Amino acid sequence: MTTLENRNYVATPADITALVRQHDEAMTAQGTARATYLKALVATTQAELGSPVRQRGARAAKIAAEEIAKQVAAMEVVQQRFYAAVLQAIGEGPPAQRNARANFARTAASTLRRWIKAGNDVRALAAARVTKEALRITGAARRTASPTARRAERTANRFTDMVTELAKADKGAAIAALEAAMTRIASMLIALGQKPTTKPAEAMSEHKPFRTREGLFWPASVPAGTG
Image (cartoon, rainbow, N blue to C red; front, side):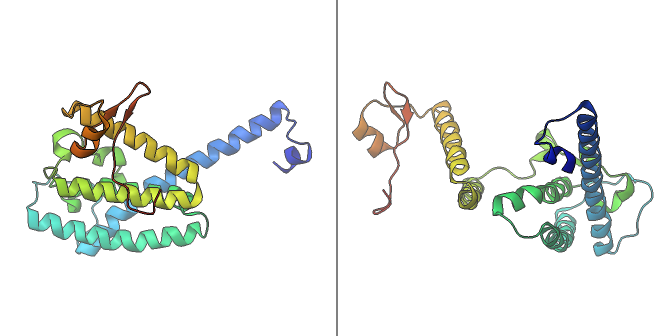
């Protein structure tokens, strides 16, 4: 691409052909790396458990809660080592960019974690044949535990922590993410039966959505000195 830079990016069809081929090669390499990471996570977790490496997948009955906890713990140990290596390879940079580039590793771990938590035996997998799609848990099988208010609060805390980190690199993107989340939350509140009011005092005292001609607002208590 140095030639294009020297020509101020005035390109020929041949230049575009070369550019597309470069892009395709990068995409192929990226896909291969992601697939290999998942296979390595499975095989190394099996090794952590002291299980023999399987060449072919085996059918296995659902495992008990104690075994699930054991296998998830083994996977987390492996993922911790792997993820440290991922971040080292990525190097320094804005947190948001590093987070995005390392997302494939977190996604692979999340997929395998959910699969095990659904009662599946990681020892029954043939790592060489594992795919993310094959391990994907959907529908009722994905919900291994009933949602609770405490879990919802932890999720909200993780979201705000993520937005705080994003704001360090891109304040505008962080504000946009918060605004989108607030709109969805307000819509959910109404769907759950929290009827909006046109009275400001009632909105503040009873924590109801406040409706005006311009739109819908959610009253929030703001700590002193923050605005």
